[in-house]
Image (tube, rainbow, N blue to C red; front, side):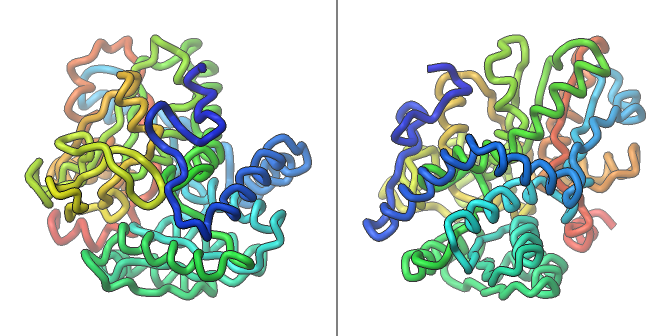
Length: 396
């Protein structure tokens, strides 16, 4: 099966993916799978989504040549895919919009979501306000403190933000609480999962709603340069922004792809969230994938300065692409990301989200060693307004 055609009918990307959920959720997930399959083949559904993406969200986003940054680094030409310019400030709105249209199609009246950095929560609250639906967002108490601006934005749009204090009180625990809610309320509630994670059909569905990033970038770079890029770079938490950029290029063997995980304070137990650095195969929150666990199989604590990358597992399609060697995965530490945050602000007048800054950190390290004829496209997946207070503690 061609890479771009995965997953298979059972939701597997090779040995990764699948449906590992309580029996209560099997029927709604199968219903969602059928509904999504019908919707993506329905021209009216796609027309409504395209119209909203253009007129409400602001697509297409620009492919911006970072001239001063390119000149400073002295190597490959760097283009930024400006998802930070979308309504709500990040790529997350692409998926939230697609899923709420599906929820309406299924007759659901209530929406739940989880969020780490808050951008998915804001996107979900936004589309719920737009369509008049009840909205509950689960968020770790630690993340609520470091992303207070986004908590206020969600509440202003009418969402109820529920603090999760269990465990590490970050993204993993927020997902746990959202899944508990969904099990109890599945008859009238749709769970807008925020990344390419979880049980089938979510990894496929979230990826598909974000493919617009790569589809646009491909067309734009061909118009600007007359050829495909040499390198694509994106940060990887769960992996939705990266899959959105990478997927339309998977069958182009000349295009190298690099995903950048959160190296935190270094690759030491419980000090990072780089699943491909010492992780292992396991099952977490509905899917079989690569994750951070100890020798007893217990999920390890994670750390990242960026709330959106602070998660113990990676999306199953990323695990598969790493397994077959199609995508390379590396990491950037907190210090790397903060330095890149400042560098992009100084050279281009752009504040990247701390998540996106991990991808920028990799480019900052390698662009100068590449030929000037090479072309890099980096996904600037979100803007850094939400992170200014956090970054200022370290940088100002």
